[in-house]
Image (cartoon, rainbow, N blue to C red):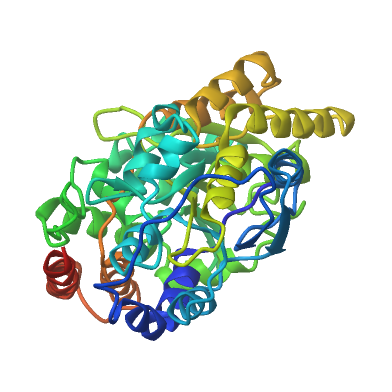
Length: 461
């Protein structure tokens, strides 16, 4: 069972803690040799890896396969990437050989010379970048160079309690986002409060983290395509925020919804869908596996999240392998990254998961790898096309969403940009500011951070 790589808030906190180390890493690097030898010796020696874990079969099968084929000793520091420790190691000249990071960190790492361009790695190992999901490649491409080898793709799917929908005379189409007035009405029809205390959440618009999704669903981007211009105060962004916040206001406000939401047994059999205390929400596709495993009989309905034109849409995120500046075995690190992300590795891992699910009498609902070729092979060979409902709808929605992704472009102020808009949304949710005022402040903060970061990069170039 694959769970998320951590919340945006947690990533923000780790990056903030690492800011001083990041700045230190950037100082005096103008004359630093950043080219690396990506060739691999016949005896590749050893590599150190930071930020990856083998907590499930998808990680374990690929890891064991890569270690065996590489023929190197691999020293793995398991768990989430410790940003402060990583950047301090780079600054001190003693980095790991390979790191596993969130893709939205790659632009900042690259701009600060904390990681190496992998253009020569891609060439040396014949990595087919066209095999990866386009948005994933865009997230690891900074100033025209590839700085990461992407893996996994997380997308949102509309998930709903079918029994609650039926009782209210609704369908999943009323909560998939295609008609915001319909979602607003469904929220009020589905919610319930006993004595003024919320007992059923009608709809959860998943703020702050899904603001980019709601903005893009009406055609607005938070950041320009070149990653240089913030667009946080555009009318479409402000209106999307107003709508998503109003969903919470109708239920007594965000604090009340969040408190009730956090009390649920999210990963267990007592989750909010199984206990009929949530009508609908958009959620990353990995939660399909959680539900199928913990509450396979929950009354679920699934669809893609949809734009106001009715088209599927998803805000993609995921991870990437990157080689730090100063890696002592960059060639072996590069090969390890290639082995972990190639099609055969993903298919072998997916086969192990499918076998485990079959043994447990459960449906294998697929895995989104970030590698389009692997996704296609896994779906055609391992994912059933006649799964029992509602899981077939969940599978179809997941793959439909994966074909309709967008992501924020890589830039040298990834953390500061995300902090600006998320803090703004939180101020609105907490009643401190109105949406227009909050996003105007965020626009100034984000643009200032972008201007400073790009100016430093342009000067060093």
